[in-house]
Image (cartoon, rainbow, N blue to C red; front, side, top):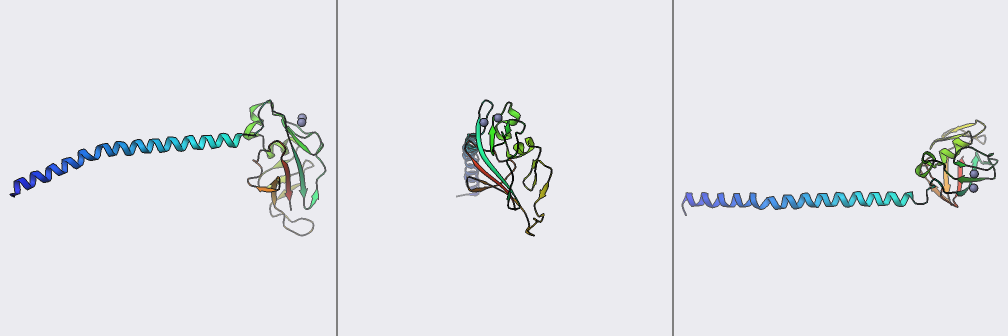
Length: 174
Ligand SMILES: [Zn+2]
Ligand SMILES: [Zn+2]
């Protein structure tokens, strides 16, 4: 075999490789698009599933709540404002009247705000204006921290939790 035919053969192999790669590039891109589409679809459907049970405008749902501050049960808060409110009997009534207080907006923080208090993941202000931050010391000398249990199971984040129908909510600072 002389150098010339050797060169031609190498050239042919090279051009074959370039041509042969093209369909794979397209297949790879197609696969990436497919995977991304499936992933987005999956994430969106999971998001929808999470929204399930969220209070929507027109719903009227209820959850029981109790709030403990440094071991002491707070008295039921009086009739409060907004679509996520209490009638003063230890329950949260969720009947949102607009989207701003429905769905993922129907949070524990919104309930507390309606009572005149405030709630974040690290702080609670009771309707009578007492403020408790994570790390504050309770009268018994112990360090207090905010926690939320829903039907006996700890939940985090706390303030953005959306109560569902028949939830039993236990919010504690202790
Ligand atoms: Zn009600
Ligand atoms: Zn009501």
